[in-house]
Length: 620
Image 1 (cartoon, rainbow, N blue to C red):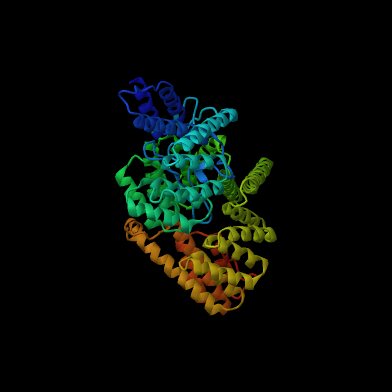
Image 2 (image 1 turned 90 degrees about the horizontal axis):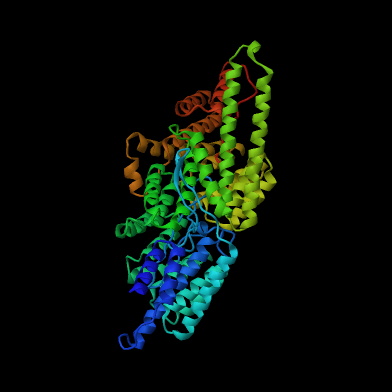
């Protein structure tokens, strides 16, 4: 009976991700297993021993996978591989998944724990949950030595090789061996093994799920979809397949369909933190921050029972805070958001130094620099309002310190992006962010090169095409600009950024009527979204799967578009319509360029030309 209790305890610990305790109890159960031959026939002895050995092997490679810094064969962390997760075998503990973060200007890409629910960073020390700067931060324990991890892998391999040689007709033995291959080699090697194994066991859900997951990692998304569709035809409530299929839909920007699948999973088990985390990501990708925060809270409530989910949720929360910072919401404490994101990312970096974590840290330093420059601007404004006799040299010294700090943070942003690319040259988010960095610095040849890399890695992301178009426009490559922005609109006909930048191009080329048409189309789309907010219908609209941007962001974009439309009317000599548009822009957002253009337009109207009007906004 002691042996049986150890076995059952080991299985339960395996289910909840406590792989250290799981392997200890399962090893004790195996060492103490000695059934009486007259009570237990040999056939059932073999089945029992096989199940115990499979569970023990799984606990060993789950421990190894959860203790490593990065997924083997990739430059990425376990929580950021690609989407989906590997499942376990029937008769042993199931495994799980997670998803989450990140590309600019508007999306987080799904990320996932490759080792699943039974994984996660194993903590050998104590852990406490504390509230720092507006968010919870878990105190991590000490990392696991590499020699301990290697021994666990070797022991698991030894157990599984013996099982396969003695039980070659049992699918779960091959399934576990395939998972071990994944933990030891690049995903492509394990995928080939599963493709070979699955022919011998058609209709096996676990093999189909794991093969689908590995196809996600190797960018064979069409074939991966087929695997999960086969499973859901046989078993519509298969948790692993629901979550993995949802991860693919998120990568295709099919947010509503992904939420339907995640909802089916949560209807079965509301204590599944990985699915709550994936649901949070789907809302973050559409800037629905209130819903995202609710899902993150639910994930945090249940994550204490699943150690493998904690790091994913922490990373999602950091990206939530960074997204809130970019949303222009007036009600947030921006400094608290920055501090909270920094606490979370530093805790993740302690164990998971990965490409995507470095991308997130680069965005953090960008946000810190922007907040500093905002504070400097306000200081200068206050000083300008003082009498000149009250200004002191200490103010100049303070501004010098602020400039030095801003330069240092800009350099840290670049360092993190370079590190991200070094760790994973296939990370399009890192290339896109590098392009944005050099675009801001005015180094356009480098910006174009980096945006091209991002486009090459994912040709279906509208945002990256827009950024490449902006870089071409600023560099004077107008034909290339037109081609690239038209491609962006083909990918997303509702993209206000793509349409606004295309209108800017038409204006520069003197095609004023085309420019006006595009600006008016932008205003129509933005105003329709703003009416949804004003009528209190945003929740109903979002529930129908229609993305709605935050109200403050819409107001800002409407002001930008009215400003740019005013410049077209000025080119035509229609000063009255130009002034009306500048006045409309001021009603929506207090942009500096609008104020300057209005002052210059007044001088033009009075016959006192101030050097022309032409401060436009490009939405990259």
